Each structure stands twice: as structure tokens, then as C-alpha cells.
Amino acid sequence: MSLDRALELAGRSLGIAYPNPTVGAVVVADGEIVGEGVTEPHGGRHGEVVAIAAAAERARGAALYVTMEPCAHHGRTPPCVDAVLAAGIARVVAGCHDPNPDASGGLEQLRAAGVEVELDDRFEARAQNEAWRTWVARGRPFVTYKVAVTLDGRVTVPDARWVTGEESRLLVHQLRASADAVGVGMGTVRADAPRLDARGVPVVREPRRLAFGRGPLPPGSELELRRGPLEDELPALAAEGVQALLLEGGPTLATAFLERGLVDKLLLFVAPTLAGAGPHLLGELPAPLSLTRLSARQVGADVLLEGYLNEP
Image (cartoon, rainbow, N blue to C red; front, side, top):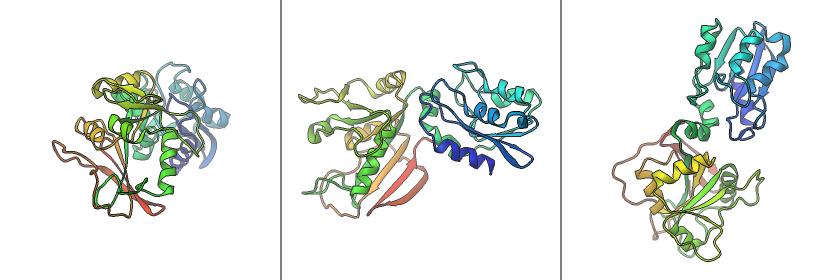
């Protein structure tokens, strides 16, 4: 249950530590939570250090529950492993490994120092920092493909501006607000002249707005043209700090990303409509693709299907 509490703490503060991951931590002594913490804004303390400081002397001999293993390297702050050892923590339970090759190995170091350690590997812990994990492990952004379709798989409805309802469209703006960049293809640029900004929702920083393709962009377009091969553009974006890319393009761009294995998560908004005509969701793929962690929930009159092609 204490790891659940650590996950809850981190879930409330996702993105606050960008470009670092958000980590939640709880210190438990004699069956009682004596310290809690979450990663502070960039350059601040990591979650486990905050929790240990809150626990003070009661940290000695206590258990630390943390959503990701304590880091083992010196970055902007000292290694969290050192703080755990200095505090006299007797047991550490981590929700996932650290995929950063420069910072991983914290559990092994703690075990070697005599601390009891346990990896309670949880998908929820990995998913909280899914964009960051892909960014550090694969050197590219975590790509989410969002698309709205009718029940017969069309991405447009004749004589209608929108496929889905107002609630789904509001959720899309929330997704944009949490992304580092939003991208479409040139077909969408020419057909819809999309703005791709986040509107009507709280925004810490607007995402970069990208158009993938050879161009040219129409006069007055405020989008940023990315004209290189996707295999080159995604690492380049990652080097520029883009961890989360929300893809909103049409069938051509979606197919190009999917056939190259560059889509990590699919968000499919399904409207209760039969369009009867119009372009389909995707073009031809070289082979079927299977999704994991498939879930469904109601969003207004629509249904949102969510699944992973590459789990974090």
C-alpha cells in the first residue's frame, strides 16, 4: 500500500521536474508513514531525498517505498543512493528500474551495502514517466498517435466539421498541453490548416507544432517543417528536448510512423457514427500489429480505446 501512496504522490505532479522524471517516495516506520516526497522542479531534490528529509531521525531503520529505484550517479544533485545509506534506511521497495544507463544500478548498490531491496515492477510506475523512459533508453520521443474515427473506420464525416464530440475534443487539448510537441503531415496541413495549440485548458508551456513532410508550408503557417526521414527527425527532436510527441496526422503519416515501429501508444476516439464514405484510418501495413494494455472508456458520447505498441 505504501508503494500505491508513492504512485499517487507522483501522479499528482507529473511533468513538474521536466526534463527529469517525476518520482514519488514514502518512508514507513513501525507501520506508519513518517515521510513523503515527490521530485521537485528541475534542479531540486529527488522524491526519495524529500521523503527522507521529512522523516528526519525516524528514517533510520525504516522502509523506503519509491516509484523508481534511487539514482546512482551525480547529476545536478548527489546520488539518491548516498542519501538512502546516510539516513540508515533498512529496506527499499522500488516500482521500476531506472532505464538511464548513467543513473541505473541503485538497487544493486544498496544491496551490496547491506540494505534489503525489492523490485515490485509495476506497469503503472513505468507509465508515469513513459515519455522520459523512451527518451533516455531509445534516444527518441515517446510517440502517441491520436485519431478520431467513426464506427466504420473513417476519419471524416461527410458535411461535418468534427468526427467526435466536444468532450473528446477537450481531452485532445489536454493531451496537447501535456506534450512537448504535436505533429501532423503535409496532407493535414493543406486540408485543415491546423493550429495544433492547446486551447481551453491549463497550459504550462505550449507544445512545439510540427509538420512532417517535404513542404512547402502554406503562407502564414506557424508550424515548424521537419522535412527529413522520420528515423533522423525523431532523434534530432529528442536531442532538442522533445520527450513526448503527440501525432495527429492523417492516414499517410500514421502509416509511415507505424510501419517503421515509431508509434508507442495509440489513442483511438470512436464516434457513434457510420460515415459511409471518406478515408480510412490507415493505409496498408507490411504486417499486423498487436497492442498491449488495451483499455476502453467513455468520453461523452464517444469511446476512447487506448493501447501500447511499445510499452515503456
